[in-house]
Image (cartoon, rainbow over all chains, first blue to last red; front, side):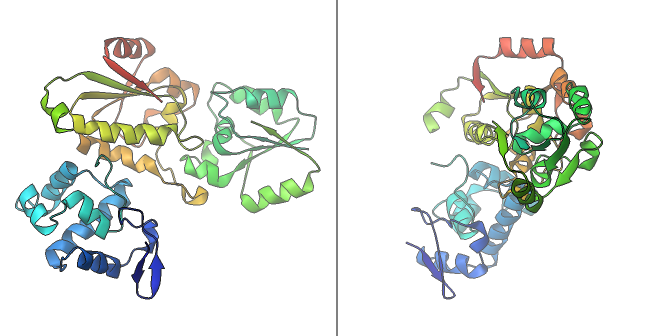
Length: 110
Length: 100
Length: 127
């Protein structure tokens, strides 16, 4: 089932991840988050933007433990921990945040 | 006649055989992993250099760049071309032999 | 996955890469397997032999062939605790490639050292 964003119909895979990375825009994240019952705030966006930069640099969506470590390095210990990230993204900071960011499912997640 | 080679010369003998069995004044185009055959400083550099007196050799630019290589990596007198030039070569030559 | 990581058995894994990066899918697939396997917290080494050394060439730009530039992912391996990358010197020499031409820090070793690495590995996966 494609998702509707600003009058465009965007293809997603069976788990809801965007099929084409280049289709992403901010409203994609907003709409996906709303479906999951999340209202995106600044803290969410910080992680989503971090993920997009990470993907740009390394061409992969990081596994959750790597994400946690990398966030800690970049944004500080109080954010680079599972508790903080799971509060923002209850379905898993790897899977859910990557989905909102328009990235594929993290490598190494089942 | 246009000959294309798309295999690495270090893994398969496609380029070597191509150069052995190619008529004088033919055109050889290296594509995909075949572009590694145009590198200088390799163990097959002499073989390729010597063949340049018989054939005109090209490499496909996008395949070269994908592999982190450029003009400076190449043996002299091997020319870099783009997709449009590839099409032109294919049209100009009556037959194409693909050395897979 | 939890069970395996908690079983406590750590083996010496060696991923052997012998293919050039973009002409076939082997190199990209190998990297995916390494990243997935990293979750099992084993003692991982990667060996680059023959055309495999081309995978590490710096300045790769795949815009023109419309494929993923997975050479950038080698820089992320450290964060996955995959830190032992070995490149065979003889393979570099035959291809006119120097250590400076590579995108990440590696250990360049001789054939005889590579032989030893292979002999001492407990699980070997070939690509």
